[in-house]
Length: 425
Image 1 (cartoon, rainbow, N blue to C red):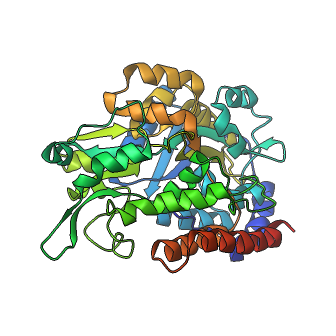
Image 2 (image 1 turned 120 degrees about the horizontal axis):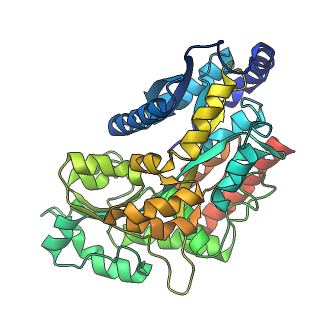
Image 3 (image 1 turned 30 degrees about the vertical axis):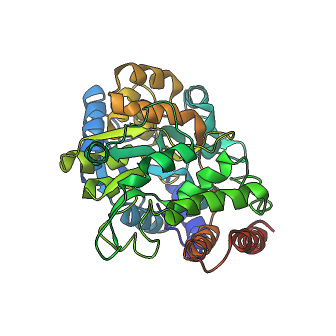
């Protein structure tokens, strides 16, 4: 997932918020139905699932009509950026923690603190989700879901290789995983990989490995002062990540995004990859392709700790909304009593109370996601794309053998500290 916010327009955003704030009115028109707009990123099946969720809300609240707009990931963030700048954003906006900082820090969202029940609702959320919506002591969003990455695999490919399925709740060590499943990689007569054991999103996987080793990328994900990656733990995480390429579980780094392997979120659906590391959003393509799949928690290094990459998703009310009362009713429902229905979209409920309800009725393939949930790390939340671009470029050089692990962490430390200083002084 890539952040799509451009720093060059932030000053325009600030100006538009001043205008929007002056225009704001509480609630909708007197009497009759109030119409609000809600937007979110979504693929084809996700859009259907979220529309069904919104329809359920409207049945419970016939006084509110919700107009929806669902867009692919990249197009969504471009639409958010342009509509916030122009002052025409939707009343309720979906946010993912790693893309939210420019909007939260520049005042795009209404502070929810004084809305009825906001503080109490935030207290119901899983502790790890709350920091993403609080800035300078104010609540600027309400957690709705946690996107958890776990292993998803093609049962047919494991059956053909005669290897066992991994446990759906107890993680293997990385040594066990590599030893057991490297046989899933197949080559043709020319020595080219035609079936891969794994296809992972290595930038995000590597962030999980750093945490598994006991290291940190930044001293603070929300307002960092320095990069902490240049450490034995950071170097060990890079070297572990590279084992998948060295032992040929993974297609060559130079071809894995351009070949027949799909993306790290759709690889298993191609029928050419046994394992991928993704969240609930990766399941609909598998069902569409008729693939019998299983899930497992992410392996971890022997003697170390568990961690996996994930996301905190939340709902915010646009500061310029003239329908705040109706928008808040919608947000409260989505993040409260609507959470069991929300879980059907693929994310896990952010609301701890409803998470326990969902666990009791969830299908077996969700066990791995529940197993990994307590070990989710969310990653940096900087207000520009520069640090993420630095990580991606440096990781590419490392995986393509242009630089060593030691050189990679040194580059990220030196250049990353410059970026942090430029942002925060």
